[in-house]
Length: 114
Image (cartoon, rainbow, N blue to C red; front, side):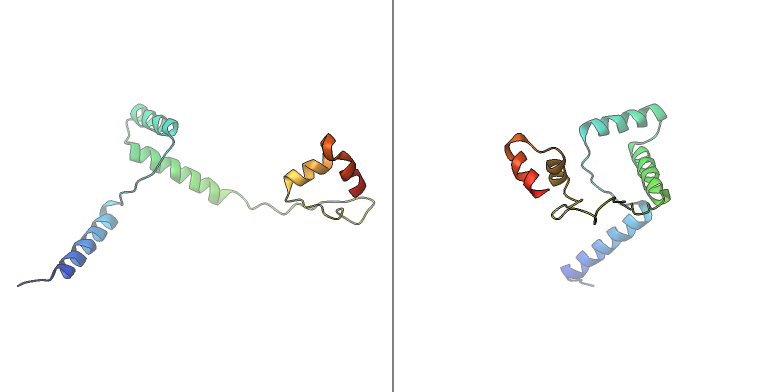
């Protein structure tokens, strides 16, 4: 029986996918050199494989993320006014810093805005 190359190639890819699902996927990660050295050292000291150390660390990080309670929004209380000054954006930390600590070059300009 003669098969065309397309079906052979498709069968090969299907077989690879099944093997990956049965025996685990091979994945390439780019890690910081110092982090990799720490992980290798932890594997050597614990007598485990590097894969086991990385898997455990990833599981712990993901479980902490799932367990952390969602934070409630912060309510800002204002006194003696109608809220924020015009032009103030609480998401713009650089702009807030300029308003709180003006530099000498634009101090007069900011004072007139207040």
